[in-house]
Each structure stands twice: as structure tokens, then as C-alpha cells.
Length: 199
Ligand SMILES: [Zn+2]
Image 1 (spheres, rainbow, N blue to C red):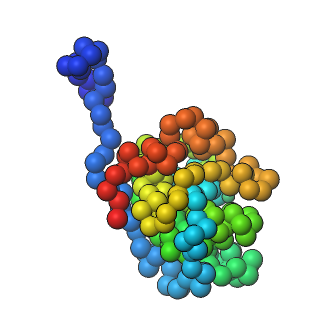
Image 2: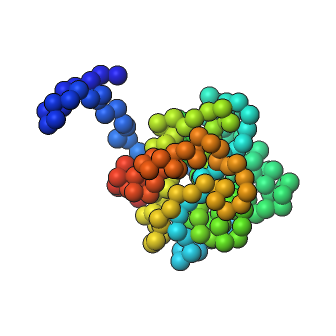
């Protein structure tokens, strides 16, 4: 990583390597041929997003895009055919490359947060990491961008929370929980600063 001497404070900093390009939004048609039967989001009820992980062993962040697409279709089948739910439970997923996958989408009510009130009040973002992985910089940026998709559509969005805030679960894992608690990483204020111009 290159450095430069800051003209203002005189200190030597690492150059800012954060990408200025928006994350790639991958459409639902990339991973399933089905349509979502999930109910519409309730604008007046939404106050934030909840973060999730799959709870999978090892590493999944090195999968190809095709493998990720197959994984998501597997989750959908499990949720619909196995659990009898209306669609894949999450609204969006973010992979380690920073891609934002449209699952049931931000216009739908979440089905992943564990209670009806939590599903009405928070969208659900799935971080595609295995239990031994930490989110990459690109994933962190993608999650912040995804949170902004709600923030620019619904009034009163304030919170980024762990799934475990609403029900007893380890989800989204210790590494993501730490980033929800460090005062800077997974916060709506950070998302607004990082991605001011989301549509
Ligand atoms: Zn979860």
C-alpha cells in the first residue's frame, strides 16, 4: 500500500484505497427463475436492517459467482419447500467481492429476523461468509450500500442490528457482531457518509 505525507498535519498516511465505484447489484434472475411471493414492506414500520450470516462451516467467500447463485437457490428451496415460507427469507445478500444480490428485495417485508415485529421493523441482509471468515473491505462497503437501499426509500431508518437482538441466536457471528459494536463500521451514519448518492 502506498503512503503520502499529509499536507495538513504532516503525518504519513496510507493512501485511501476505498473504491468510489458503486457495488454491483446482481438481479434476482441471476440465481432463480422464481418470482417472490413475499408480502410488501410496511413503510411506516421500518426502522433499520438486521445482519445475518449462513452459519456455515469454514470458508464460502472464495466461491465463484455461479456457486453463490446455486447456494442462494438452495436457501430459497429450503425456505420455501422445507419451511413453507413464501420466499427466501433475506431481502439482499452481500458477497466477499462486495456484490449486492437481490433476494426478495428491499420492497418486500423480511422473513429472516425471527419475529413478526422484527420482520416488519428491519430489512434482512445476509453476509455470505463462513464461520471462520471475516468480512472483507468490499463486503463491508457492500453491506453499507445495501443498508442505504432502505435508508433512501423509507423514512426513519436508523439501526443496523444483529439478528441476535431479536431472538436467541449466534447469528451473524462474533466477527460481524464486533463490527456492529465498534462505534464506526456497521452504522447508518457510516453508510450515509460512505455512499451519499444511493438511488
Ligand atoms: Zn440470522
